[in-house]
Length: 100
Image (tube, rainbow, N blue to C red; front, side):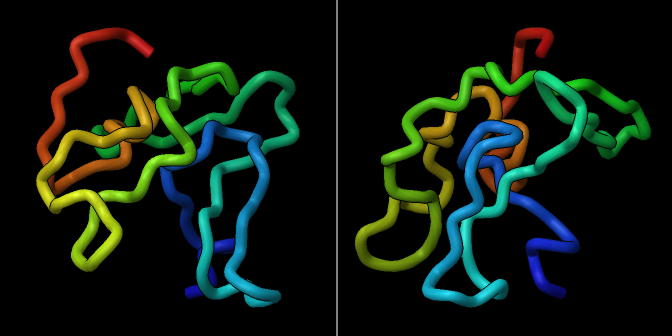
Protein backbone atom coordinates (compact mmCIF):
# COMPACT_ATOMS: atom_id res chain seq x y z
CA UNK A 1 0.00 0.00 0.00
CA UNK A 2 2.58 2.54 -1.02
CA UNK A 3 0.92 5.98 -1.05
CA UNK A 4 2.67 6.96 -4.25
CA UNK A 5 0.58 4.34 -6.07
CA UNK A 6 -2.56 3.93 -3.97
CA UNK A 7 -3.62 7.21 -2.36
CA UNK A 8 -2.96 10.85 -1.67
CA UNK A 9 -3.34 13.53 0.98
CA UNK A 10 -4.97 16.96 0.71
CA UNK A 11 -2.13 18.97 2.22
CA UNK A 12 -0.49 20.27 -0.96
CA UNK A 13 -2.52 21.43 -3.98
CA UNK A 14 -2.93 19.05 -6.96
CA UNK A 15 0.12 18.67 -9.21
CA UNK A 16 2.37 20.11 -6.48
CA UNK A 17 5.62 18.46 -5.41
CA UNK A 18 5.78 15.04 -3.75
CA UNK A 19 7.48 15.13 -0.35
CA UNK A 20 8.84 11.88 1.10
CA UNK A 21 10.59 11.15 4.36
CA UNK A 22 14.15 10.20 3.49
CA UNK A 23 14.45 8.22 0.28
CA UNK A 24 11.44 5.99 0.93
CA UNK A 25 8.19 5.70 -0.99
CA UNK A 26 6.31 4.63 2.15
CA UNK A 27 5.79 7.83 4.08
CA UNK A 28 5.24 11.36 2.90
CA UNK A 29 2.89 14.01 1.58
CA UNK A 30 1.71 12.71 -1.77
CA UNK A 31 -0.62 14.98 -3.72
CA UNK A 32 -2.65 13.83 -6.73
CA UNK A 33 -1.03 14.50 -10.05
CA UNK A 34 -2.16 14.27 -13.62
CA UNK A 35 -1.05 14.99 -17.14
CA UNK A 36 -4.17 17.15 -17.52
CA UNK A 37 -3.04 20.74 -17.75
CA UNK A 38 -4.31 22.84 -14.87
CA UNK A 39 -5.66 20.18 -12.50
CA UNK A 40 -6.74 16.63 -11.79
CA UNK A 41 -9.91 14.55 -12.01
CA UNK A 42 -11.06 13.31 -8.60
CA UNK A 43 -13.67 10.62 -7.96
CA UNK A 44 -15.92 11.70 -5.08
CA UNK A 45 -17.52 9.28 -2.60
CA UNK A 46 -20.96 9.85 -4.15
CA UNK A 47 -19.67 8.70 -7.56
CA UNK A 48 -19.30 12.18 -9.05
CA UNK A 49 -16.13 13.00 -10.97
CA UNK A 50 -14.85 16.55 -10.39
CA UNK A 51 -12.03 18.41 -12.08
CA UNK A 52 -10.03 20.08 -9.31
CA UNK A 53 -7.82 22.91 -10.52
CA UNK A 54 -4.25 23.39 -9.36
CA UNK A 55 -5.31 26.78 -8.01
CA UNK A 56 -7.86 25.42 -5.49
CA UNK A 57 -7.55 27.24 -2.16
CA UNK A 58 -5.10 25.04 -0.23
CA UNK A 59 -4.44 27.13 2.90
CA UNK A 60 -1.08 27.15 4.65
CA UNK A 61 1.14 24.31 3.44
CA UNK A 62 3.63 25.12 6.24
CA UNK A 63 1.11 24.41 9.00
CA UNK A 64 1.28 21.37 11.23
CA UNK A 65 -1.11 18.56 10.27
CA UNK A 66 -4.17 17.57 12.30
CA UNK A 67 -3.38 14.31 14.10
CA UNK A 68 -2.46 12.74 17.43
CA UNK A 69 0.93 13.53 18.91
CA UNK A 70 3.16 16.38 19.92
CA UNK A 71 3.76 19.14 17.40
CA UNK A 72 0.46 18.55 15.58
CA UNK A 73 -2.92 20.30 15.67
CA UNK A 74 -5.48 18.64 17.95
CA UNK A 75 -7.72 16.01 16.28
CA UNK A 76 -11.07 17.57 15.38
CA UNK A 77 -9.50 20.93 14.49
CA UNK A 78 -10.44 22.66 11.26
CA UNK A 79 -8.04 21.80 8.43
CA UNK A 80 -5.34 24.46 7.97
CA UNK A 81 -5.13 23.45 4.30
CA UNK A 82 -8.16 25.39 3.08
CA UNK A 83 -10.96 24.03 0.89
CA UNK A 84 -8.61 21.35 -0.45
CA UNK A 85 -7.76 20.19 3.07
CA UNK A 86 -11.43 20.18 4.08
CA UNK A 87 -12.19 17.86 1.16
CA UNK A 88 -9.76 15.35 2.64
CA UNK A 89 -11.10 15.30 6.18
CA UNK A 90 -13.51 12.78 7.56
CA UNK A 91 -13.34 12.80 11.33
CA UNK A 92 -13.59 16.60 11.63
CA UNK A 93 -16.81 16.55 9.56
CA UNK A 94 -15.99 19.83 7.81
CA UNK A 95 -18.77 21.18 5.62
CA UNK A 96 -17.91 22.97 2.39
CA UNK A 97 -20.46 25.63 1.47
CA UNK A 98 -18.95 26.57 -1.86
CA UNK A 99 -18.64 24.99 -5.30
CA UNK A 100 -15.10 23.97 -6.09
